[in-house]
Image (cartoon, rainbow, N blue to C red; front, top):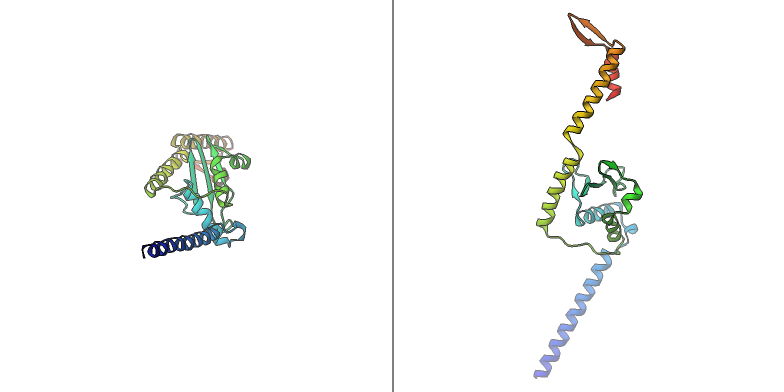
Length: 193
């Protein structure tokens, strides 16, 4: 009798393993569905899941944009009506735009495509870590994109150039000792901006 219980227990254990293996295998088949065979919506969701899984974060300014920052490098991918499965990756390093060739050589981009094409598995990250990283990346992205001194210096250069054009071409009218811009000055300003 003990032998019978032992045999039944072993059979039950093996049969559950086979069922689990079958379920697991079926699940892997679904997950490994070829990217090109997916609908646009499935591709979009897959791309977003991968981006978030490898460390990209959703931009707070544009919810359809995902960014990744490493050092002085900012990489992004945008989803919109024109690019429902995502635009090409774009990026900047030390405030200079990266070429497509430079971007495709980045390890994070290679990882994205390897996961998307089923060559690698998605890394697992604790949710707390992901939230903290997302917040830090957003703060760094904002700091990288908007440098107050650079914005002020740029605006001052433009204002000086515009002022010299207005003065040189006399695009103002003096009334009671004050200078008022004429239509042509405002048009120049509009073209300038």
